[in-house]
Every structure is written in structure tokens, then in C-alpha cells.
Length: 151
Image 1 (cartoon, rainbow, N blue to C red):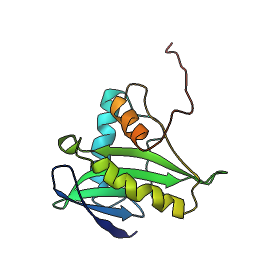
Image 2: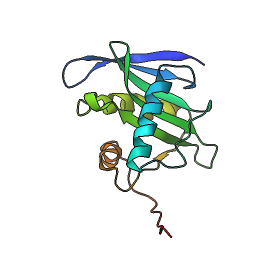
Image 3: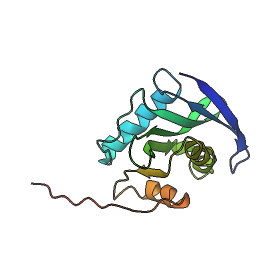
């Protein structure tokens, strides 16, 4: 496992945001943040079975003053298009609407493209409007609808 600084940017408030990458999320500053965000999705009913991270999972994450304030946790699927699958992306509630997701994403897309990925994909719950908006802001579009009925 390695952690690499990808650069420093400024959010909309002028705060310095360091963007980092880790080749595995276990035992890194990303893991507690990931778990907190995962629990929040479960509580809202927005969790999906694909929200499981393991040591194949990597992350781009944002830190302000040494505190993780956002992440894009992903893995690269060994499919026909070598898809970069976003497992969970989130920005801390106290840091939203500051451009932090876009700072992370500007590092994420070129990185996975350089790794040979031809597609980026993610599951998004139909009621998760903030995530739908962040996906749309980066060019992701709805592709597949799953229909279901509770019995």
C-alpha cells in the first residue's frame, strides 16, 4: 500500500485542499471516513451491495488540515472495457458545496484513463439526488435502471 500526494488546490472558500491517492484503503486515513459515509447511506436506505471495499479498492481523497473531508473509493474491474467502478464517493457534510468533489475528480479521471480504463461507472440510488448531481457534473449519465417490487 502506498499513499501519494497528487497536488494541492483551493476550494471555493480559499481553503487549501491536498488531494492524495492510496493503492488500498485498509489502515489508511480513508477507512474511517469511508465507514462513516457507508453507515450514512445504510441509514438513508441508499446502500447497495456493490458498496463493499476490500484491498483491491483504491481511493482518491481530499484532506484539509490533515483531516479527510472527501473520497472517491474505486476499483478497476477486469471486464471488456476495464471499467473504473466507483464504490463510494462522498464529501463530508461540513465541506459540501465547496468544489471538493470536483478537485478530486479532476485527478481521478485522468489517472484511471492512464491506467487503461475506457469507462467509469457507479451505482446511484434513485433518491440520492446529491450523488446524481455530482455524477452529472462530471459527465456520467444514467445507463441502466433496475426495477424491483417489495413483497
